[in-house]
Structure formats: structure tokens, C-alpha cells
Image (cartoon, rainbow, N blue to C red):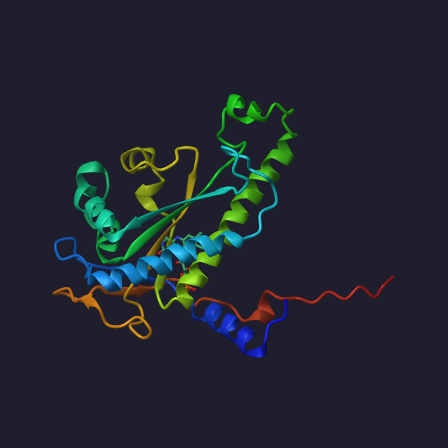
Length: 246
Ligand SMILES: Cc1cc2nc3c(=O)[nH]c(=O)nc-3n(C[C@H](O)[C@H](O)[C@H](O)COP(=O)(O)O)c2cc1C
């Protein structure tokens, strides 16, 4: 497959344009959308979630017959807002200032990406289902690391595809989505370990999508990633190794 210079430039533009923005809204005045706009955005998210599946993976996880080591659950804004409304009843141990309800009130969707550990934290019974002898401990650790790494590749694919769809993204570790209590409440696969709650901002760039959001009374707060300006120049982490001593 050959790419044109313009296509390469489009990929580079997408990689450079992906930036974290934590969008925090108001739980009593959550975001809402015109129907058509909402359907268009949902179609873009569904398409991105499927296209991101082209991520590499090293080992057949074979969970329920599925090779990929990731699972993906989409929560649209109506579900997000229900979680936000119930959040402090469900979790009475979180600080009042917890940002999750505000983010759930401002996003168009929250895409939960989980990886499926095969050995760590699994009972021997689960592990031996395949009927094969267990690999050595260091091999088990390597396989699980690579299931996690593959799922990270899935998440980055997703962020790039959403960015190129003119949507804003924020890769959150997931907070309460990582807990068994939340998994049970909303029906997430219990064998999964949440790697990312990707908050999708439908409103990131009206261009190309039309201006069909219904404005909230108070504009949501948009907070950039805390490490966004901390990147060291390539010279400080990049080396080219030439082997010329043999
Ligand atoms: C695995 C992973 C988990 C993250 N979890 C959080 C998080 O829980 N809270 C947060 O503020 N940012 C989180 N981030 C986003 C980073 O803060 C952000 O990527 C960083 O500040 C750099 O900014 P940039 O994404 O705009 O380049 C996470 C990023 C990654 C890769």
C-alpha cells in the first residue's frame, strides 16, 4: 500500500493535533445535542471504535474465543449523565470535588477500554481452561505486559481516529470505573481491567460537523493535560545506534 505525501501529512497532522482536554460540565445543566448532530457524532464514534481494532497484538488472548486482549464499552451521554446523577450515592467514599460527574455531564460519549489479564490476578482454574500447561512465571508476566501494551495501541488508535473526526479526547485512567462496584452497576466485563475511560467531546470543533449543540448555561471548563508542556526535545530521549566496532 502506497501513501501520498498528502496522506502522510494528514497522519502527521492527526498525531500532532491529538491533545488532552478534560472538559468539565455541570451535573445539573448537562450537555445536550440536536438529534441529527447526535446521530452523526455517534456514527463517527462507532466507526472509530471499530477502525481502532487494527491495533497490533502479540498473543491470542482467546477469551470467550476472541483473540484480541481488549474489550470496549461505549456509554453515550444519556447513560453518562445517569451515572453522574447517581455517582455520589453509589460512591460515598469519594471527595465532593471528584471531577468524574462533571466530565460525565460534558461528554458526548465515554468509551471504556479494558484489557484482559491472562495470568496476573487470575485463578489457576481460569488460566488452565485452554488445557495447556502454564508458561513459566516470567513468560506469564511478559504475555500480560504485551496484552496491556496491545490495548494501549488500541487506545491510541482510537484517540487519533476521534481527533481526525474533529472530536476532543481525554484518556483518563478511569477512576471509579476501575472498581468492581462500578463494573457490577453498569455491567462491564469483570475479567477486564479498565485501562482507559476515553471522554469524547462532540463539541471540540464545530467545523465539519455543523453547530448543532444546545448550549449549556455555563460553558464547560476545558483543562489541558498537566504534562502537555513538559515534553523534552527529541534529542534528550532519542539516540541512533551505529554498530561499527565489529
Ligand atoms: C495511561 C494514561 C492514563 C492517563 N490518566 C489520566 C488521568 O487519570 N488524569 C489526567 O489528568 N490525565 C490522564 N492522562 C492524560 C495525561 O495527563 C496527558 O496525556 C498528559 O498530560 C500529556 O498531555 P497531552 O495528552 O495533551 O499530550 C493519562 C494518559 C495516559 C497515557
